[in-house]
Length: 374
Image 1 (cartoon, rainbow, N blue to C red):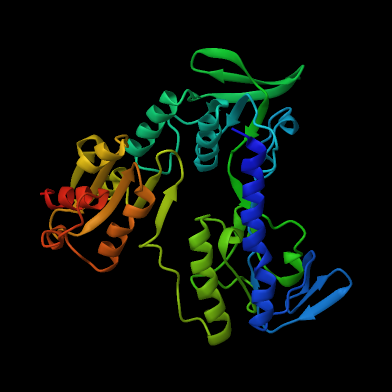
Image 2: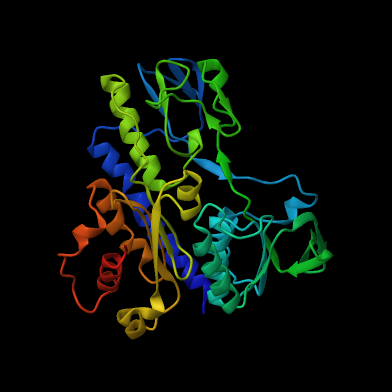
């Protein structure tokens, strides 16, 4: 694989997406000013030598990588620098076992890099259904990745052309070497330098404080996306931004609704999720029925040669309504929307009985499986 070509393609695609934003905004009558903005009062910001006043403001500054207080952390890189590497590393140590860690781990392992993941918890992807993370751990190991769980990184040192990560785990102390170290321990709102104090906007390291209408502690200022912490997903940011703008212009009428939040993790294979995990449903003491079908039992998955993973659906026994769903496998990121629409439309498991799906498709396997849940 010519990794430089991979990076070039990525740059070209992003260039097209980003390059079209300016002309689009101009066409829409929006003035675009490039520079670092900071509040000087609740109704005025400063960008370079210019000042701008407004009746309303929306903060949508996004997030940045968290660098943990580890000795030698400066020897590592974040996902931002990783995306610009022209050369494929022979080996990589990843500190963290969350979404960023596992997505990039799979990308580089698939390309031929020897990947080692160091996770502090007892499993990777702790925000996902336990069975989903278990499948990804097994798949990762089959890809040649090493995953060390319940371990604490003590420090990072340099030894010749290699980086050495000193780890303390259940088996004692050990050293893990790699050509580079990826620090993937989460993200935090990028609030430094915004002058929020001058605007009367209260915040913590977890994000800007907002009410149910996404209004900050300063009446004229609203915030959305990663800047307020919580769900750091692109679709959620877009959803919040639309609501925040409408509330800012028309008065506080709408609240963001996360019940239908569909999420995906782009590992190989991907994970698609919506609603509660099985653990969350049981913690809420719901009377649930849980159905699970391995991809290996799907004729279409066998035809495609994609038999890793499973379909999993959680249903309320009394109402027959969907509580949640978790898919690991080929096209999981697409198929999960079937359950999102079902939850939004208050469809029951029994409503799927009359659906006649296309044969042979993965959706057919999924729908036929849903019909069997009692």
